[in-house]
Image 1 (spheres, rainbow, N blue to C red):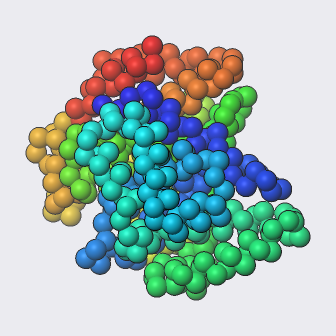
Image 2 (image 1 turned 45 degrees about the horizontal axis):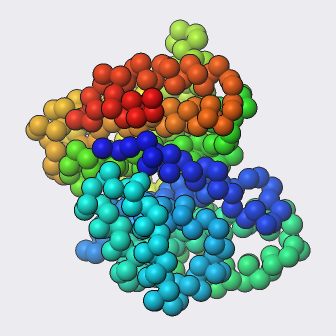
Amino acid sequence: MIRKALLLKIFDAAYMQRWNDKLRPVDFAELDKQAHKMLIAYFLGKFEEKKKTFSWTEIIEGGLFEFLQRIVLTDIKPPIFYKIKEDTAQYERLNKWVYEKLEPTISCLGKNFCERFRYYFSESDNTLNKRILSAAHFYATKWEFDLIEHAYPHGYEISEINKTLQQNQERYYDLKGITKLAMYQNYRKFIDLCGQLRFQARWAHIHKIPRTSVLGHMLFVAIVSYLFSLEINACYRRCVNNFFTGLFHDLPEVLTRDIISPVKRSIEGLSDLIKEYEKEQMKEEVFRLIPDQWHGEMKLFTGVLEEFPDEENEFYSVITVDGKIKRTPSQFINKNHNSDEYMPRDGELVKAADGLAAFIEAYVAIQNGCTGQDFKNTTFLLRKSYATATIAGINFGEIYSDFD
């Protein structure tokens, strides 16, 4: 079962500042960078997914393993890290130390997960899935650097960093998605649009430490949704759908901003009006930026399914039968539809992960001395809501009791 220590370790990335030796137009948090990286990995992966060696779960887990490694190695600058990586023996020792630091925290995920984590850093970096992650990491870094360079083009090391990034980009031209990004402005706009969620703050109306963005929140929900999926032995497609629903579930907020639930519910019909506007804007502003054949999947992940025009259908548990999407509770998916052929997605589980993410944000803010009543209300209401809840076999009461 997922424990408090692991949830807080994942959230540590919200504190970690990137490029903190450079003049930055905005703060760059590691949690946001990792979220942007995984959104880009999805984009790149869509162009490669028909290849035999491609695996979405290897993309997801590889991204998670690299994320956890980065949390531990926060003080090592990239040039030094890559220098260590060139020495196989040194890199092996470094990763052994990383695992020793993380093992008490990730052991709750089981022996198999821990073994996959250890093996990941010992295998070749030239596999298709690792190269997609590496390219996504590069592109997210370059996206940040372009903002920094624009703010202070003649700053120390700026020209050298720019040269290095240009050279690195050439390493990934064998990936179709990278060449597509170079060729088509709409694809670059899609990545920019996703990146814009870095600038939208959660709890923007109140003092909060650490500040968190909508983008970082989306990754937290995605990771927790995936780990829950592993815990219930979800099939491959169910794991993938749950992760990417978590990762994309708030994408429509790039068009409407982060409107908190009390405001949505303050006026009768307002929530439905916002949802309808989100659907219209997603079609006009987002779907036109990506290939048509991706639209069905993106509608599932972002909650704009025509089959369920009412509010928050990204939080519906669904299966696909004879090409039609049907709403089906997660408990029945567990019993009868936990198979790739049904394309299952546990919206209930993603919603619970979304609530848990909000709880962690409020809990940590309180621990850091933030006294806003909203934080206290949020932690109280979420504890109460999930005190006796079991969703898809996950006992949420036990998870929340870990924070008593």
